[in-house]
Image (cartoon, rainbow over all chains, first blue to last red; front, side, top):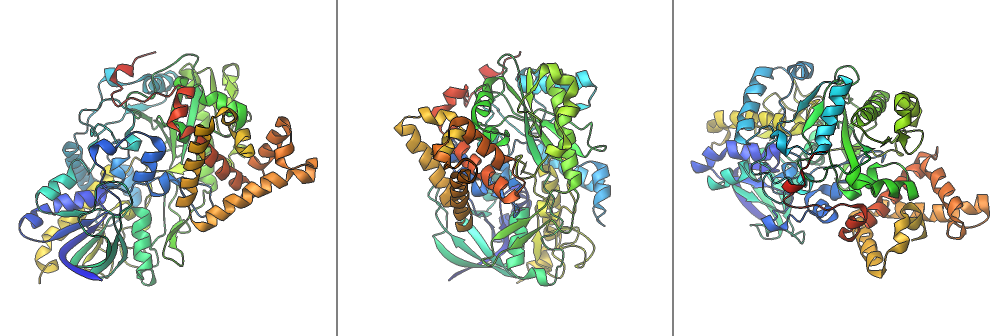
Length: 500
Length: 123
């Protein structure tokens, strides 16, 4: 096995890894050797084709359909130069103060996270789109919320030169989304940080990690030749995303002394809901996600967001099959869509494990409170669709495939809680959090508030795995804020950590 | 393919090219799955094809349309979660094979554009 020596190795290049790389770039500029090892490929600009199946296969783990152990929920997370920031919609919210209080991590203060979040919001060109840039799918959501008296707000998003392709979740074909692949990684590379793609880290230790470089058959070639490699480093920052970071540490043996490793996983279980309008609306042109409704955030534990998905994902999220399913799909240009995010509790039993081969197994069960939230969210969404003028609504737990407009005042009755059946309705997640939670000590957490693994001075975690509970909002800005803390701690202690 | 045609009736009218593209998409998805999932896929397909023998005296392929739908609906709502989830997974693969084809987008009115600014009109 080849051996290479670095001062700092960062595993993963998404919101966490990208932020750490850029913040440590001054060390690279000063002569320290820093490498980012990214499992996924780097695609050339013209390789973002907008074709759903092709892009999902190239940019997501398991094409965006990683299954939980009980097979009731799929997870979508990215695998690419830029990680999930290549495939998110770029919605950029700062974590609410109440959530930080609920996190209750000594050393984590709202004002600190808010200040760091503001830095990334500026760095990533976060702003609200002009009214003229909002399509009907988004405007109708706002209109419905206003009619019902529901609180709705506009998402700030991180785009520059958006051309309204609506293909954000397949990787922006116009390079407009300001993910780490556009902002932090190029800046880090310019300062001397190396980013090695197609490089999967298989095991991590106190001062080294083992990796395999393999060509996936698409994307630009890795700067390292294929094969196994051992990378020695004085500092290792694990930023592989909540699932893969926990799995990497587990298969590397850290579970023995960190009993909470992999546990307290939260997912923001999500549903895609659909209302059909009597006429065509603009939906698959224009940014897909401009508004959210937090009316039910505290009371019923769910958020509603605008969304617009592609044909396969849409078809998968409709309940049923056959003629009525086809009929709704053929109304694609008349569909309004709402994404539900349930705020799930952090339970010890919901966790990442590894199987005998060291592959991650996601042992997650949607409990009654989550199913209640999903049920109530369907009722609220149906009301919004009808208030916005929909002729009929498809609710996955509906008593019938369609709820017609004449029955709009009966949605409570026509969407029975008993129909919210895991394994029948499609539930997905793109907000994967926890498993390497911050806390006080090894008995209750994996890291301290600086992301440093308890008992391992040179080993850090810098991604959404750090969340001790759900962020209750779209998480990427918070991931960057926490990664910023990790990088600061390394910089401030570089003399000791990086000593020969 | 008979089960797939009941899940998405438009598959009946796919030409040979469309069917080949669908098979290629599903094959690629299955190749990305682990061996256990591939085995489960084969098992649920077999169960769906043979289960109707117990109730209707015929395999799925030989049922009329209404009975095919009744069988699939039973699996969709099945109290036995492994069968319910198995049908869900099968359905997802069929949808991927059909709606994942660029050639079917025009059938449903989906026409993405890298520059969609002209399409952001208001109702």
